[in-house]
Structure formats: C-alpha cells, structure tokens
Amino acid sequence: MAASFPETAISTDRLLLRPLAEDDAPGLAAMMADDLVLAWTDLPHPFTEAYAAELARTLAPAHRAAGRGIVLAVTEHLTQRLVGLVELRNTDWRLRSTEISYVTAVWARGEGYAPEAVLGVAQWLFEDRGFLRLEMRTAAGNTAAQQVAQRIGAISEGVLRSAWIVRGESGEVAVESRSDLILWSLLPEDLESPGPHRDGWHGDHRYVLRD
Image (cartoon, rainbow, N blue to C red):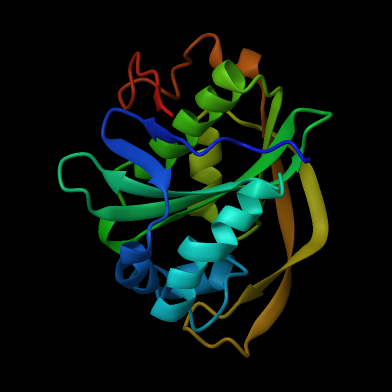
C-alpha cells in the first residue's frame, strides 16, 4: 500500500486548513471563476459547482489515498469563510519531498493568508511528517505567487524554461502562451531562524495539528 498523508487539519493564527467538504462547492466554484486563477493555474474551466463537489467527494480523497499529496480548504477561524485552497502534489516518499500550490480567493487577497497557509503546511510537513524539502513553481509573470515564496523564506533555485502554459488574464481560455517557471525550495533549516522578511506577519506562530 502506498504511503499517504493522514486526514488532518492544520490551525494557524487566523486560518484552519482542513479537508474539502461537499458544501464548500459554491464557494470553491466562485473562487475558481476569477480571471487570475484561470490565468496561472491548470484547473478545469469552467470550474463548476458539480466539479467542486466531485473534487471534495472523490478526487481529493483519491489523490490523498494514492500517496500523491493532499488537498486542503483554507478557511478563516472567525467566520469559517473559504478563503483559499492548498494542494500538495508530486510527492516523493523516498526523498521526503513534495510540491505545494496555492490559490487565494479574490475576496481575501491582501490579508497575507497565502504565506500564512503555506508556512503552516511547511511546518507540519517538516516537524510532524518528517519531510525534508518543499518545492514551489511559479510562472514567470505571477509576481503575487513569487512574493509568497519570498515571504516565507523560500530559495529560488533557477528557471525551468518554457515549462508551463498560461491562459489569458481576461478569462479567454483560448488565449494560451508558454511560460518559464521559477523553481523555489524550502528546507527545514530555512525555518529555524526567523528572518527579517517574516517579521510583522506571523511572529512566533507555530501550527497546531488536529488529526
């Protein structure tokens, strides 16, 4: 049987990362309808409520059970509002390495939720699951995703040339072009000493695991 992540929830200062539920479908479909999500991700378009429900009911659990990764809804503690989605994928259990991708809802941007969620997942991976490497890949034009990587202290390792396809930011799926990807990595030692780039937004925050 393949190694796999446990069903879990991760609590940060302001956020709860938990498994998707079918009643997340309306919020998830609304979140994925945003032009920037369309442009920078390879998610299906249109991302319907029916697909969102299928993702929660079948696709995400199968992704976890097969050992490929895990999909977590990102919600606010105070309101329980869905504000993002985090996915671990391309997990290598021998190397203890995985790749993270993240989406922030248009109604929650500018709050620092993406770096808080990614850092919470990183701490969980390194401290609870014994992982040794977390990768991020950001399209060359996606400066918001690059800022998230920089903010958590990830190291840019280089450029994967012509390794991605981006879609039109105006919502036109037919407008596609090739893009370079910037490869970032985060290792356990990168989190040992908080640097000045992290001051003022998470302080001494540590995740709280809720299995």
